[in-house]
Image (cartoon, rainbow, N blue to C red):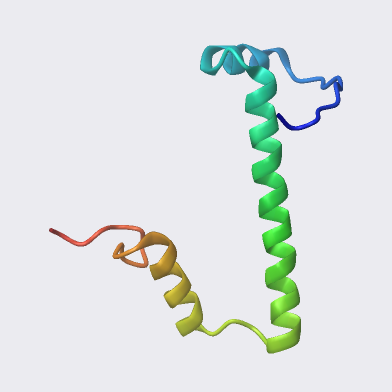
Length: 82
């Protein structure tokens, strides 16, 4: 198990009520949300650094990335008829 540190976090009452509807493990839920946000920010920093070195992403590169992430779904987010 990972080493942990106990902290206090203040949240609006309505958010706490919704959290408790979703999970019995509020700490675990919040830890996963924080981890997801940290990954998001680190990825954003990596993408900016890449563009500073190699220039802006082209529309073709963005389309390829979208296809790899979302599969065969169209660029508008809808899947083709199967």
